[in-house]
Image (cartoon, rainbow over all chains, first blue to last red; front, side):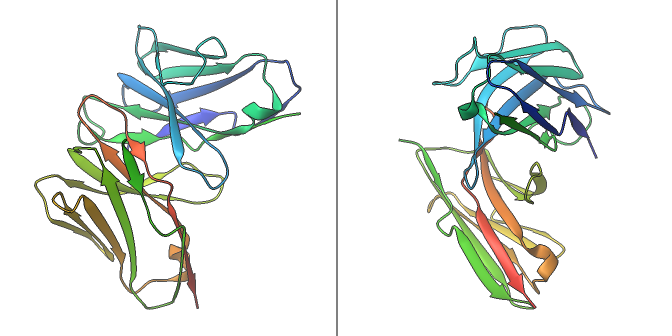
Length: 119
Length: 111
């Protein structure tokens, strides 16, 4: 099946620094990638949707200047948390959707997640 | 407002029994409904997808039903095993959107 990887799996940083999380589709081309955030015992909350080569669309309440998303190629999207603060500590999960191969059109494949801890 | 509710936060059952999890939604018209398994500290893993024109789908010990009139899906695990212990997420897909998730039900199967 289609595989989505994320790097790093865990990151600890100091307050005020920026952190970049990479999401890669390993065996398919992802025309659309999604970033979710999950707090303990909560649902996955969609943060933004990005299509390759265009600007990301952010969900209401998500600061686009704080969570920078770049979808530069059909296999790579990055999420940069700028000037991170303790309240940004969460589990960040990316997801990728393909139009060709890798299952049905509507199937989203999920990465393993990145645990961000901001001290 | 739009809501997806998995109305049991936790479900405890004995090994060998059938686990039944419920997902209800309000103000959505999903083309697809999907169920995922999530283990602690991991991303969701796809289990089953059911389309709006399908009533039931099966895969090994798993069965999903979808009632668009009741706006409800039921997810069954038969002959449950301790290894089935995890959080199960219901997710809806509407055309042109990303998957939207319920909060999940944490299933614990005791031996």
